[in-house]
Image 1 (cartoon, rainbow, N blue to C red):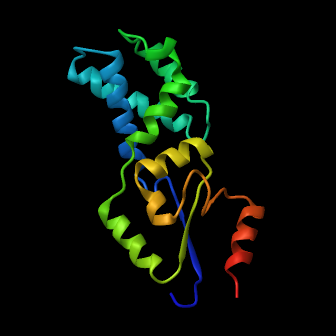
Image 2 (image 1 turned 45 degrees about the vertical axis):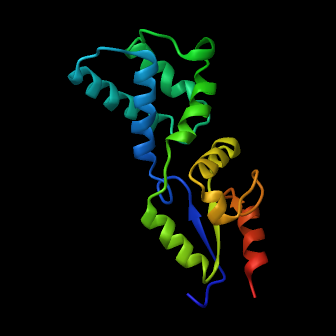
Length: 166
């Protein structure tokens, strides 16, 4: 690794397990909006929620995930804040992530040898919330959205490359 000066890590599905977060998000929605649903139906709801999430992956408008889900499984109780789907998602989803201790240990070991950074294509607000919630800001030195967070564009990658080249 001595020939490298820096290493970039993708946030979702590399550093953080998005599938677990989606399961957790479903649990929060179920807790807030439903009750006494038979287990077989709950399992079907989770499956359909994941399908809707997959269709909306990479799209910042999460109404496209929850509206069709709620159309298919009408909630008993509405979401808080006048059914503010986007606000609900933006608040809760980043809090559904956790980092695996082995991943954290591996990054800390790599960090001893080279600079490390995060590359992501998600919304800055949501990605920063995930980073702060999982305490990756301490590992990667990201504070208040400043630091080594890069969006994957040719310009940002070129800046990163130029900063850490010989």
